[in-house]
Amino acid sequence: MTFIIAIDGPAAAGKGTLSRKIAKTYGFHHLDTGLTYRATAKALLDAGLPLDDADVAATMAREVDLAGLDRSVLAQHHIGEAASKIAVMPLVRRALVEAQRAFADREPGTVLDGRDIGTVVCPQAQVKLYVTASPDVRARRRHDEIIANGGSADYEAIFEDVKKRDERDMGRADSPLKPADDAHLLDTSEMSIEAAFQAAKILIDAVLNPN
Ligand code: CDP
Ligand code: CDP
Image (cartoon, rainbow, N blue to C red; front, side, top):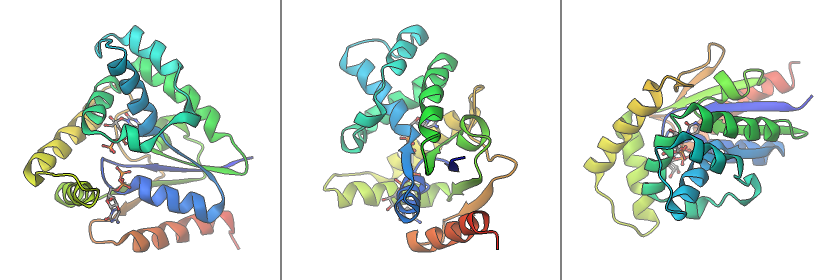
């Protein structure tokens, strides 16, 4: 049976950074499920199609090519906004969850990060982490990331955006963001990337090598 690590949490908590490091360390496949929502949103925007038609959006979601997800293209702010709007639609979620579950079965193991991996996509995951950090720390991280990539950013606007994204992710009826009952909470507000990784590694190793 394949080994599944589920990593959930709010925007800019450090899920992707942690997931990539874990996948590399253990030789597992990694899927950033946020990219599947972003890719669907981008395809709709590129085709000039509306974002508020669930049937149209779900048809687009079924076409998403997991192998072709390009982080650099999909990172733009307006795509993230559009993604969080179509992510409230049950039909869109159903189509993407199906593709995510197929990915999760890959051998020898997988790391999936998102909002509902431990609760809905892979409730059977052997390790579940709920990675979080305070909204101001997350906004600061997003801000610094944009500056480091040569962009310009307004901290206050990003902070408001982070709070709005949290409300939408936690408040939706279908698959809201919340920790699974059996998830380990990892608050990285005061943690470096390396410290968060070491904390995660201890939890994973305890399941992989129980003795
Ligand atoms: O990087 P950021 O956290 O802003 O966004 P993301 O992880 O790329 O996800 C984009 C949007 O897709 C989020 O705002 C979520 O609303 C949605 N999403 C979701 O609903 N379920 C997932 N498993 C992953 C993302
Ligand atoms: O995937 P998610 O939106 O949860 O976050 P991310 O893209 O992995 O991390 C957002 C930013 O925070 C990146 O620039 C990371 O390098 C940074 N980060 C950090 O400074 N300290 C941590 N403990 C985790 C992430």
